[in-house]
Each structure stands twice: as structure tokens, then as C-alpha cells.
Length: 51
Image (cartoon, rainbow, N blue to C red; front, side):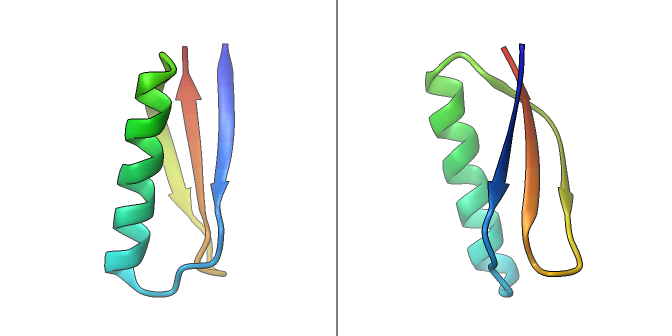
């Protein structure tokens, strides 16, 4: 099973990294592993997880 999560607008790299790490750890607790991610031109991140 796959799940996609969008990290909202975060123009600073440090903030984006922190939000991605926080979401990845949260999803890991639910049994999901981060498979891939993409950063959009509008400073959002798309994370794909697999259970």
C-alpha cells in the first residue's frame, strides 16, 4: 500500500528538511517507509510512502 503526503509551502531549506524528517518519522511509527520524494517549484514537497 502506498500513501502520498504533501508538505505545504516552506521556502527555507532548513525548515523543509525538518518538516520532511518529522513526517517521515511519524509515518514510520505507522508502519510506512519513505520511498521517494520531490520538491516542487512552489516550495512544497511530495513524499511517497510504502507500507
